[in-house]
Each structure stands twice: as C-alpha cells, then as structure tokens.
Image 1: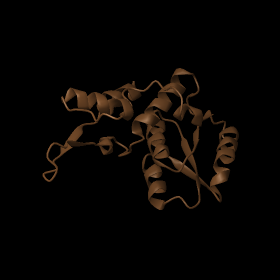
Image 2: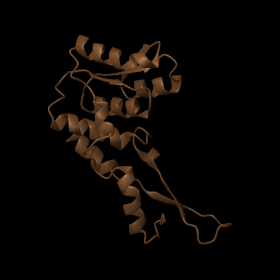
Image 3: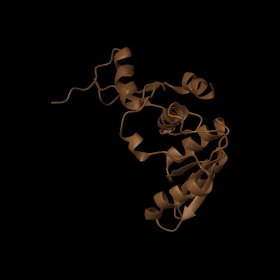
Image 4: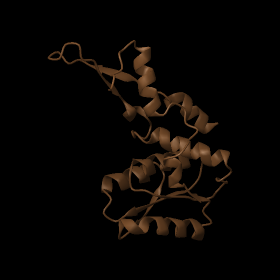
Length: 171
C-alpha cells in the first residue's frame, strides 16, 4: 500500500515548457524528475525494482536490503527500504561523494565503503549473506523487463502527444 501511494503521488512528472525566443518553431520541454521525494531521476526505477522484489517474494520483514551502487539509484532505494521498514545498506567505493553518502543516510540508509569500485559486488553479496539480508537487487533487472508505471522513456513521448506537440522525426 505504501508503494502504491508513492505511485499515485509521483508516477508522472510534469513537462515544463522552456521558451526559446531566438528559435521560432522550436518547442523545448523539460521533464522535472526532481519533483520526486528523493529528487532523483532514478526514483521510478527504484520503485519498480522494489515492486518486482515484493511481487517475487524476495523481501521479507526485517531483512536487510543490500545494493552495490554509489549513485542516485541507491538514494532512491534507501527511500523505498525505509518506506517498507527495511534496513538498507549501499556498498560504495570509498571515493563516492560525501553528498551522495549524506543523501543515502538522509533517506534512512547506511553505507559500507570499499577501497575499489571493482569490490562493490562481492562486498554486497557478502554483506547480504552475513546480515541474513534478503537480497542484492539483481542488476539484470535494470536492463530487462520491469513492471514499471510510466518509466520516463515511455512517459515523455506520451506526454508530448498529450500536449499536441510534434515529436521529432528521425530518418
């Protein structure tokens, strides 16, 4: 129910027209993904990953969610883990920006730093195992089919059509 409430609140982001007075006949629209609670372009992706994990029975009460990511996806995953009352650990290279670490912490997550980026996946798997953690969200899901309400790549052309705006044609 909590994730469904997030879907209702943030499944669509608005198109914002940007006038270009020096370029007549050119319409430019920005899609404001920063309006999500995490301020992240990856918010809808993380929601889809958590929905997929819930539907497949990968999440269980109290189980730690471990993710090997230092980017915006980890920030959004920390948000959804907290929404579901699950502990979250992002395994990240030590050189990850302090701003990203702070965002993950703000959304209820913890970080586990490793020396080399090449170590994040093995460290995440080990942490999940050691903590009785339920999962390391499979990266293959990011490139495969997802049960996602209006991912940005689908939403943008649909939104442009709804505005009666010509979508660019490509030859």
